[in-house]
Length: 54
Image 1: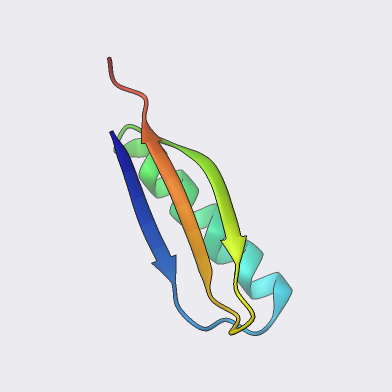
Image 2: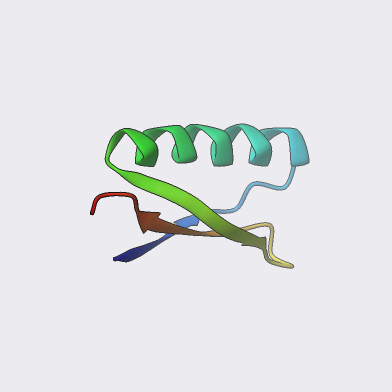
């Protein structure tokens, strides 16, 4: 199962990196691994997770 999360407007790269890391760690605790992510031109991030439960 896949899950997609949006991180809202975060114009500073350092802040975006922290938010991505925090969300990845949170989702890992829920049984999801970060597969990929994209940063949009509007300073948002789209994170795609996959369930690590079998």
